[in-house]
Length: 134
Ligand code: CO
Image (tube, rainbow, N blue to C red; front, side, top):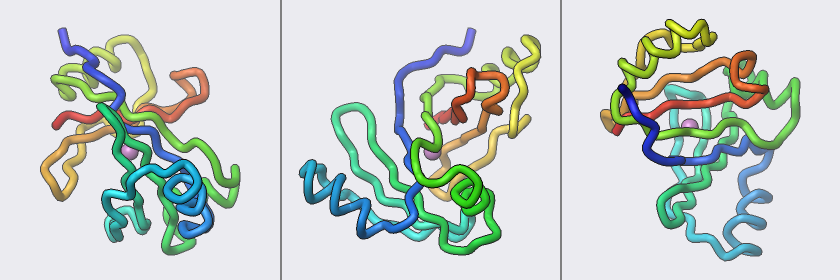
């Protein structure tokens, strides 16, 4: 049986990265580990790691991406929660068997080799859920 191991990150979609960092980094004092452009997702992402999980701030860099459309439609705020799983292929097939609506039927591969897939909010109680296998 595939197993969920931990919360890997919580992602927040932001309109203005500097304004958001003024809160998360400067007011809360969280460490900004990296600020990276992710051309594949047409976004800029700030990584603020904590013990065992991190906060990611995601800002769209074009207005035609999925994340940009999300921001235009729903405004800034919580975007998704990411759960680390030990067997993403096994978990996706378990979810399919249970008629859970998936956004990615097959895992996608990030530049750093991590595999990920998204589960549709319709099946999760309204929360976009990402699965990660490292
Ligand atoms: Co994510």
